[in-house]
Image (cartoon, rainbow, N blue to C red; front, side):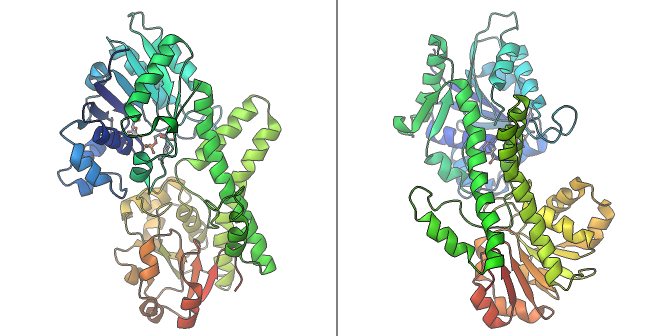
Length: 466
Ligand code: NAI
C-alpha cells in the first residue's frame, strides 16, 4: 500500500471539519482537503477571521488557523479532491428517513450512496474509502458493491472508522481520544488499508488506543456506544421523576450510585432530556435494524430509551404550565439556552425546541437567549416542526442578544442549556426585573437553587423537591 499523502473528506460539518483540522494539524506531511456541496459552509470555513468558521468548538478556530492554507483546504471542487486523494473519508449526514420504508426510524443513506457513486465515477487510481459517518451495520457492503463494479480496474478498500468525539469537547476528544476504532477486511489488502489508517492516527495517538476489528463490529459499535450513553441519561431521568415524588434528591442518588466503580460517575446528570443530532437517530436506527431482523424484544428494549427521553421533555413543559397556575397564555417565559448542550452552536434535536413547541401550543410568549445560537437558527428549528405557521412563531418568540433583556418582565425562566455563564449572572438584577412570583425551572440542575431562593425566586430543579 502506498504512503498516504493526500486525504479528501466529503462533508464539512460538525465531524468532517474538526476531525480533518486535527489530522492536518498533527500530520503536516499530509495534504487534507475537506469538500462540501454547501457553498456557504465552505465559504465560512475559509473566512479570513477563523472566529467565523461554521462550527463553534472551544479551541477549533486556533487549530484551523494553524493548518489552513498550509496542508488544510476547504473546497467545493468535490470531483478534483476525490480524484487526487489516496484516502477518502465520507463524513456526510445520515439523518433519520423522512419518507418511505423505515420512515422515522431507519437511516437515510442517500447521501452516502451519492458519495460512493461519485467516488466510483471520478476515481482513476486505487483508493482507501473510510466511513466516518455513523452508519447502519453492513453499509460497507453496499458501498463496496457500488465501488467494485466500475469496470475501470481501480481497486478500493472500504474501512469503517466511526467518530466518537462529543460536541463541545471535540478538539480535546480528537487530540486525546479514549480510543480510535478501525474496522476492515481480514484479507491482505484489507489489513494493509487498516495499517495505512493506523499509521495516520499513530502520529499522535498511542498504538494501544487504536483498536482494529472487522468492518461489521466497527459499524455496529458506534450505534451501540451511542445507545449505551443515551440509555444512562434516560435511566437517571426516569429516576428523577421518582425522586420528585419521594423527596429523594436525584443529585444525591447519582452521587451515591456513581461512586460504585462498576457504575461510574459520568453521564449520570438528570436533565430536561438529551438532544443532539446523534443519540436519537442512532438508537432509532438500532431499533429499526433489530426489528428488521425480527428481534422484537431487542428493538423494544432500546426504543424505551427514546420514549423516556420524549417523556422527560414533555414532562418538563407540563410541569412549568402546572406551576404557572395551569395557564401560560400570554405569559412571558425566558429561555436561557437553545443549543443542545453547552459549548456548541449545534441545536439539532435540542430539548429547547420541543419544550418551546409545547409552551407555544399553550400560547406562551417565549424570549430566548443563547450565547452562540442566532435567531435564524432558532426560528428555523421551530418552523421545521411545522406545528404552526412561521408567522405565528415569529410573533410569539423573540430572540435577544442580552440575557438580562430576555428576562425582563418575564413570569418565569427556563434553563435549557448548561452554559457556564448562566451561573455567574447578576441574579438579583434579574429577579428585580421580573414579574412576581419569579419562577426558575432549572432543566439542567445548573444553578445554585438555595442562593436563588434567598433572593426570592421560586425554583424547581429536575429530580428534587427542596
Ligand atoms: P453535518 O450535517 O454537520 O455535515 C454533513 C455535511 O455533509 C453537510 O455540510 C452536507 O452539505 C455535506 N454533504 C452531504 N452530502 C454531500 C455530498 N454528496 N457531497 C459533499 N458534501 C455532502 O453532519 P455531522 O454532524 O458532521 O455528521 C456527519 C456524520 O457523522 C453523521 O453520520 C453523524 O451521525 C456522524 N457523527 C456525528 C457526530 C456529531 O457530534 N455531530 C459525532 C460522531 C459521528
